[in-house]
Length: 109
Image 1 (cartoon, helix red, strand yellow):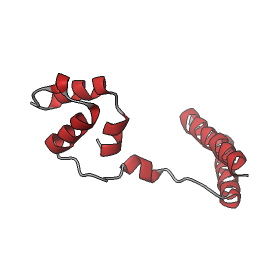
Image 2 (cartoon, helix red, strand yellow):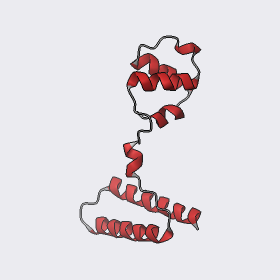
Image 3 (cartoon, rainbow, N blue to C red):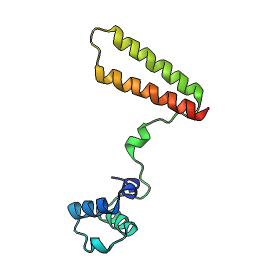
Image 4 (cartoon, rainbow, N blue to C red):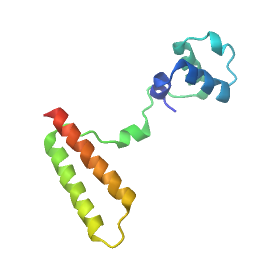
């Protein structure tokens, strides 16, 4: 859990989390900022810590690299379809990635 995830949560969700995982008193009287600070201190979350999953996702900002990525993914799709054992989940994920890259390209241009 990161600081950013806590800030995205609602007050009700923060109170439920605090009730489950900590022994913090006076949850119902706290405001959202107070709850976030209390949870950070109690759960020993480092402030400014980056989410490892978010770091994995590469955001393509220029169309040239997006086009290269799309071509690479389409080659991967054709390789999977050409083989005898194709993984439907993997194909679905690759196709979704291609679709998202095309959306990014439209937004950039």
